[in-house]
Length: 58
Image (cartoon, rainbow, N blue to C red; front, side, top):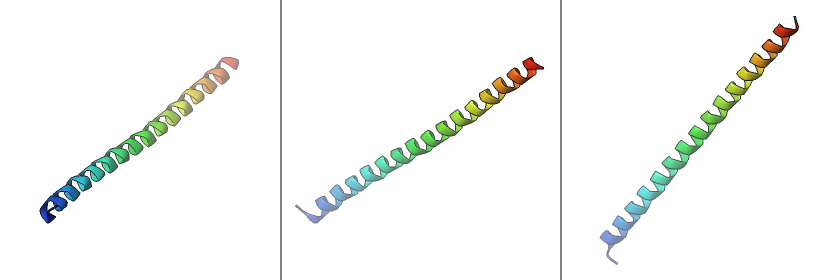
């Protein structure tokens, strides 16, 4: 194998690794954001239910 072929092959591998890392990072970030959104929604709905319960009991 010539040195040029080896360098080309390694360059392509490096691009694959970077692409996979970028995809994984985007997935992690979107998962964390989704969890934050869900917990915020959960807190809001719990607060709303609690306010409705307390409001209706008065």
